[in-house]
Amino acid sequence: MTSGLDRPPATVRFNPFTAEFRSDPYPAYRALREAAPVHRALGMWVLTRHADVRAVLHDRSFAADLIPRLVAERAGAAADPGMARVARLAQGSLVFTEGPAHARLRGLVNRVFTRAAVAGLRDAVAARVRDLAGRLPAAGEGVVDVVAEFAAPLPVAVLTDWMALPAELAGRVPDWTHDVRFLLEPGLVQPAGIARVAGVVAEFTAALEAVVEERRAHPGDDLVSRLLAARAGSGDRFTAEEIAFLCIMCFVAGTETTTALIGSAVLALLHHPREPERLRTAPAHASAVVAETLRHQTPLQLTKRVATRPHRVGDQEIRPGDQVLLCLGAANRDPAVFPRPDEFDSSRDTTAHLAFGHGVHGCLGAGLATLQATVALEELARRGFGWRPAPGDGVVWQDDSVILRGPERLPVVAAG
Image (cartoon, rainbow, N blue to C red; front, side, top):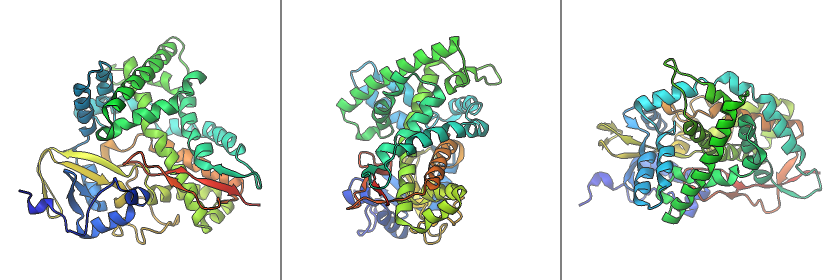
C-alpha cells in the first residue's frame, strides 16, 4: 500500500518527459515549490526550493555516485566486454567520485585547472570567437542558426585547442561526445544505445591515449601535457587512461552545457531589447548577462544525489538509499532568493545561483564556460548585436536530454 508521504497533492505532478515540461519547465517548478517542495515522484524525492537544494549539495552525506552505480549495473547486464571500460569511465569521473578517490583526483586536477590557467586561455578563446563571428552573415544575407554556426562549434574548438588535438581527431569529437554524454542519463539509454556508447568510448579512449603517449615523448604547454606533469605531494600521478577519461569528461560536461549557455544568452538578448543596448555601450557588462543567463536558463537543470543517512527535509523523512533529484533550474528561480525570478534582469545580484552546483562537487569547468560565454557576448556586442529573431521565431529547445536545457536551433537574421 502506498503511504501518504508518497502521494503529492492531486494538482501537482512532476513529469519531466512531457512536451510541455521540455518546452518550459518553470511553471511545473513553481507549482511544486509552492504546493509540494519536497515531492515524491518517479521513485525519488524532487527538491525545488533553493535552500533545500543548496543544503543537499553542501551535505557530503548525500552521495554523488549514483550515476556510476547505474552505469555499472547496465554494464554488468550487457554482453559487450567493452562495457568494463565504460564503467571505469563513470566510476573514475571527478563529478561522481566520493571519499579518498575524489580527494585524489581533485588534488591532481586542481594543479592544472587553476584560475590563472583558465584566464590564460582568454586570447585563444577570443581568436576562436572572432573567427566564428566573422563567418556569420551580415544584413540582407539570410537566416543563420546561431547554435549550429556559433554556440556549438566554440566550446569544442576551445577544448581541442587547449588539448592540442590533431585535426583528424578534433573533427570526430562532437559526435563522440554526444554519444558518451548519454552516460549522464543511463536510465534513458536502450541496450543498443549502450553498445554504441561502449564502442565510442573505446575509440575515444584509444585516440586520446595515443595523444597522451605522444605528449609523454614530446611535452608542450597544452592541457594533456599539464595533466601528465601533475603530481600530488606523494608523487602520485594520473595514468594514461585516467587522462584520456578526464579529457572525455571535459567534452561531455563542458561542451553541450556551454553551447546551451551561449544560445540561451543570445536568446535573452533577442527578447530583452534593453540588454543589447547595455552591451553595446559597455561590452564589459557581458559577464553580468552571462551570470543572469546561468540563473534564468540554467543549462544543467537537474542533478541527483543518494542519501547515506536519515535526513529530514521540510516535512518529509528521507531514508538512507533514497534518491534525491535536485532541480537546479527551480532553485535558481526561487523568489525567496531572487525577487521577480521569471524576469531576465542582468542588473540583479546573481551570486547565490546554483547553476554550477555547490560544495566539493561544484563544476570544475565553471570558469572556462563563463569565460567562453563572456568573450562571445563581448565580441557580438562589438559587432553591434544587430540580430532579430527570424520570421516565425523558430526557436527549438533540445529534447533528447532531460537534464540539459538550451536552444537546439536559434535562427536569426541580421538587421538592415
